[in-house]
Length: 190
Image (tube, rainbow, N blue to C red; front, side):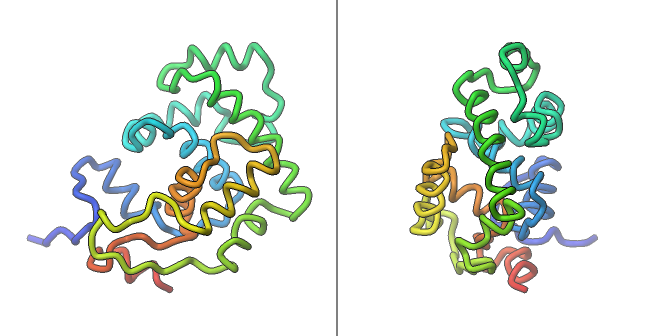
């Protein structure tokens, strides 16, 4: 009988385990996935991440697989469709922010060649390696997330406060916040 690896999160649901083991903290360089995480972290504001994660497939279906070029062209009927979409958080401000953010995301892609190039410059192209021993030590925001938030807001993004930006940084692997005794910590140090 094989022993279960030590995880920094006390999770039991297969979806949560899979997200911890395969996605959270993995350096991400795919623009569409980066946009997906930015949208989902924005929708998380005031809610539980687990709620958003469990509804991710509904979000993907409703938001055209998070393709920024499609979302940037959404009009009033799309907003009403999303307000009624099963599994999507019914929040007009967050839906409108997603459309605005898609438009700004495309502008950044045109300016920098990719959103990936833009976002990774804030950590000098390398994952910040933290060394926390307990989840209670993880910050809600950092100097870097404050800088990212300020820059995104300056460029017209919505729902990108420093706490949301830090959650995004964790999800997209700009920081490695797995606890040092978690089996993923060492794996993600390279």
